[in-house]
Length: 86
Image 1 (cartoon, rainbow, N blue to C red):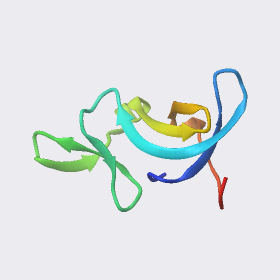
Image 2: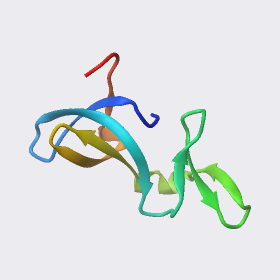
Image 3: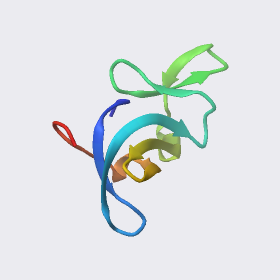
């Protein structure tokens, strides 16, 4: 998953929604991003560089998705990638 990907998911009402990933965020880390390989990484204060998110914190990662009706925040396991345009 990378920024700009077209995705679809079911919102809290169970409706299918399509949108575009605009940002990656975390409840556990202050500074997260997606690297060139499409992997979510965070800035480690200890090593002073970006490192992969640890398995125990993967559930704290969520994606901001811009839809026709606004912005939604979605866990990665709730997203489905789309090919082509929306």
